[in-house]
Image 1 (cartoon, rainbow, N blue to C red):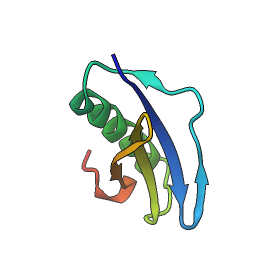
Image 2: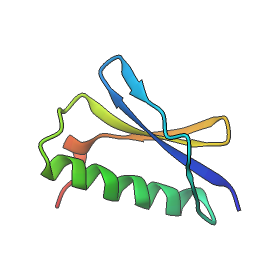
Image 3: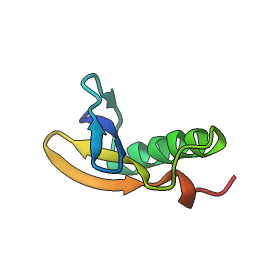
Amino acid sequence: MPCHYFHYRDGSSIFEDDVGEVFADASLAMQHATKIARELARNGEPTNAAIVVVEGSQHLSEVQPGEQGD
C-alpha cells in the first residue's frame, strides 16, 4: 500500500510531513486530508493555508481548510 504525505502550506511556507501514513488508495488519503482540513478550520487556520497531499513524489491534490463544511 502506498504511503501518503500531508504537507501543510501556509502562503509561501510549507511544512513537510516526513512520516506519512499508509492508505489503500488515494481516495482514502483524500478523506483523511479533508478531516485534517476540517480540524484546522475549526481552529481558525488562515484561508490561504492548505493540506498538500502527496503519494511518493506525486502531488495528488490540495485541500483548503476554508473550503470544508462541517
